[in-house]
Amino acid sequence: MLDLLKEPVLAVQEFVVLAGRAFQNIFRKPHYFDDVILQMDTIGVGSLVVVVLVGLFSGVVMALQMSRALAQYGEVEKTGTLVAITLARELGPVLTAIMMAGRNSSGIASELGSMKVTEQIDAMRALGTDPIQKLVTPRLVATCFMLPLLTVIADFVGLFGGWVIAIVKLHLTSRLYWTSSWQALEWNDVAQGLIKPLVFAVVVSLIGCFYGLRASGGTQGVGRATTQAMVAATIMIFITDVMITEMFVSQGVS
Amino acid sequence: MAETGSPSVLRFENVTVSFDGEAVLRDVSFEAFEGESRVILGAAGSGKTVLLKTALGLVQPDSGRVLVFGKDLGKMREGQLFDIRSRIGMVFQESALFDSLNIEENVAYPLRNQKSIRCPAGEVHGRVEQALDFVELGGTLEKFPAELSGGMRRRAAIARAVVTAPPLVLYDSPSAGLDPITAHTIMALLIKERDMTQTTTILVTYRYQDGNLMANFRYNSKQGRLEPARHSDGPLPCTTFMVLREGRLVFEGDQDRLESTADEYISKFCKHRE
Ligand SMILES: Nc1ncnc2c1ncn2[C@@H]1O[C@H](COP(=O)(O)OP(=O)(O)O)[C@@H](O)[C@H]1O
Ligand SMILES: [Mg+2]
Image (cartoon, rainbow over all chains, first blue to last red; front, side):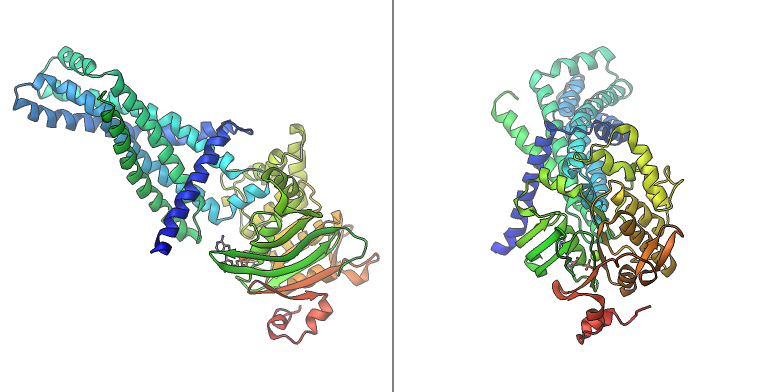
């Protein structure tokens, strides 16, 4: 039983050490700004299309679903309210982060994993660079910038999707839709909607790096690390989502 | 063998290294001196790579001490380790060139990143070209590692390891996986580097021919090729052989002793003398 627990406990410990060093390095020289910019490009700009699509369709679906539920109470005009709240609090951050887990946690894990199994990580250390400083920290910083940004984009595109349904299918006026959605948002929705993607960014980038750096056993090991990173990041997104939501709810501000 | 008077370059004292509770280096002790060549023979999985990584401080021993240039790696912080590593060149088994960088950037990497090297930015390009010319790989600066053949990648890795002119160079199976002709040219480069700069060289290999070349040939810079050492003047390069078996050092000595040994595992390595 104890042996069974040893492995995961050691892994968590290793992860915490990695996270600690990755954050420390943000404030330490040398800074690899070029790598941060490069990662912002691959992580952020590269994910734009998929995030826009996911945001759009979740807004459309939410508007359709909510309008049916609201019709039972004769309050179809509140569609904008519900779309705005669900997008800002939950769907925007969570769906964007899950797309990033699928695209970037796994991408980071396979990139660092192949560097690990071909001894490039060792070479990096032998040639004077700290792989955490050079590889992990830039990915962490870049994701922490891009994920909130992408989430906001997904939110707005989702609102736009809801608007299309409101006009075309529910025959609401534009004005009604936008004012009801705008007024629905309070500061704590916005806070939730920005804190969540920041936490998810840490999860997505560090889990990708973690599994990549501990890959072993040739190309097979890289494949394994890639899948593990994606699954672990997705699960951790849901767990941290529950924790953050619970914090906001229990503060009574929600 | 130990040249008396030469300073110690690399010293292992009862070093044991294990992964997940399994020892891959067991109680290994030896000492290499300045100017010496060492050939470490061993079957696949005998711990040759781990030994080199331990010498670089990339792997921490569970017990025992590793001293590089007389300094104990176990007593160093990461920053000091980087200083020591900047004085050691390492050629990894599969070259370990950075896939995302082209050959010029790869070779320039230690010049730009080793803090204690302090190469002025204006000199980097010249030194990279010089190192690539040394391994006869000029004209590939813009290429990426994936575009090169295995032998060319090996050459680029050698250029990257020696561009900083380190006094100690470690080679991890530099001829593994190459055809015999390419393997020979790589070995010729190794000996050229050793003889032109008098670096201490540690060569890990499972091919006895490589060790034999190391021990008995030298680089003739006038003719630009290898020649048997006995035909040229000057002292012979001193070459010591070691044999690793399942993490244990089972032999240390010169070539004559190696070839006259009765041990079956050890003599298997020197059956195929060219
Ligand atoms: N990072 C590691 N984790 C676990 N086991 C390792 C690691 N590196 C090497 N080993 C094991 O150590 C043994 C020796 O490996 P190595 O030094 O690579 O052998 P070789 O002599 O072929 O270079 C092998 O059994 C290998 O599986
Ligand atoms: Mg090896």
